[in-house]
Length: 546
Image (tube, rainbow, N blue to C red):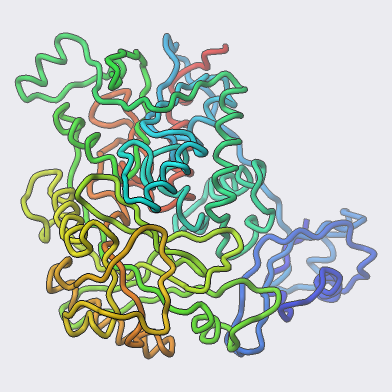
């Protein structure tokens, strides 16, 4: 096939116009083209309000034998021959499995790991502390309406992981020489996502659609011989007698034999994939007690900011509404005078700020959008990196302690509700009393509170400078009535569970992966890492069905 890059057309064009432009570039008739597939679509807004799409497309001619000569004759770097290499799962190893692999967690890493293992005959068992999507959604809605938290099924825990109650963004900055990014997108499309996610520059699914997709993936795993158990938290690891004695003597165990659930069930396995997510703090404590090698890592914390979506559209598109385009997004970075970097994270166009708490007496927020992104506000986390030097201690879970401290302060600031503060009042350090023109779009109970009392002084200073700086990039970003809500504390894992080149931890047979292990930072990268974990298991073991 022929790949053409840098095809530019105004937003609102037809597919026929794209076909005609590709034909002109190749100097052939549109009738000579058998197929045109969009590989990439990005938005060029440099001349707003005139907006353009820029495409990379793959072309197959009616007479494929003409393609090589045609490319040579045109002689443009914009036009080249291309051969798509399909993804191939690894060849299985030669070790025998006496038990099915156990996957702990059903977030993107766990589900994609489970799907790949199930498709290749390994019949995995997935264990999830929370509930399936439908029951989980009821628990989350009840929490948002009443403030009564279900510690088992909430925004952090349950089928689909924390990403189920988010914007469902699928873009990632992870390098992908093996084609796993494309594979993840194709699997999402297979189970119900819009085909556009395959080529959009910043694809997203939306929390309403993502829940249905997650359910479909689970059903496919079961159909292929796997099993999924909900309400089944893993609370311990199984070692042999000698290993248990080593742990008691503060020595590191070497080989895992299985897991223990909260119900006391002992499930034996040669391969345990740990895909627990970044909020499984009790699991991190259990791993620490079991002498699994971990270290604290840097992450970022901050606040959610809300603006009118029309204001963001005007800045990014040159108008408040543009037919054919959804709500506009943004990505911002700033370097504060104290050396701290401030940046936007998990930006949710037309979305909501949500109460994402998972522990009593502590409060965390996140952002969420539905597929249509039709909410009146844009929101984003504005976060500042914190390092182990900021943590209250030097032990491996000191980052967890830091998160808990600011979440407790957020809970107190809002009297158990999401604390909200106008940016103008945040600068003054005073509690707001009235809402301005920016009306809250929040899932969960909220009240006014002083967010300067939640974050350390250095972070508040950096956020204020960042807000003022961003006001010079997006007009109105630093408006006095922009709404802060806090605290955004779960951006990534506060620990890294060490693993070797074969993706095994210091305990052989234990495969940490995804966000909780410190190797991913979003839905797509977590799913990719879950597939890598499945490959690592398959490289060593024969399928159970062989």
